[in-house]
Length: 318
Image (cartoon, rainbow, N blue to C red):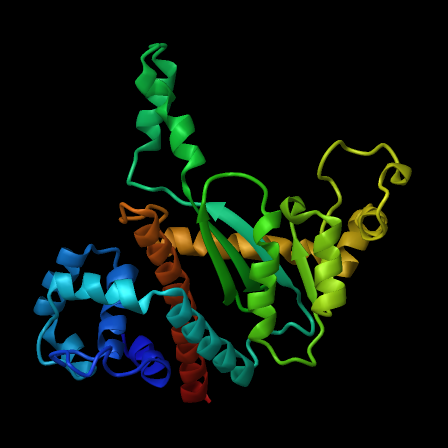
């Protein structure tokens, strides 16, 4: 909560409106939302938790715990796209100052993953699938999968920090949101920097290579395996996809170009799902997008907190 309050105090205004009651500041409410997400609580459970832990509230200057309706209304404004972008900008500046990104030696990795729209037992679903019943309820899962929330990340493989995030829903190709995801990450980094970007075959397209190399000045490495698997390089007509085919042909070349570090972004997705949960509490698309963005922010704050703790322990030992 202290790290979240410190971050929000530098980025967000104190109050949303000058005519509000001014019982709580926006940085205080953001810190409460981060605590709620980290401990996997609902809004009502977070209200009870903060009321029991008054010393947490006093640590960030709050005299009482906020109501669950106050937290819900604050989340609708604090987790807008513009506010989330400002918070990620501040985190990127912190990471650059602390030299945590390491993009000069390790690449930036892109990947997407699906999240659950509700809490569900996979064992129960498997047992229902094996029951042999032909009820229409057994086939609802297909429709549910097509509407599952989706989160795409651009993460630094050195520190597992997320620099940009894209939220949506449904399955399908990752290529449509490639430009917005990579441009968001590039905008938060120093302009002279030129680094590598690695992604899986879901982002394979010639126009993605042209966007990354010509417009953003980055080096994109993506395996050229979309569509029918070519028997030889002659079946790939475009320049950069043919080059990717030759570059990633052997294990040694994949290791040399840095593509073997792509799995680090899958580690980031696993960290978010294990630490913060893979199921969302929101019932609408807008609320689920806010839940995904809050998970990304809390994940970064946990990394900053753990790195600061390690530095403190090392300085104490010395």
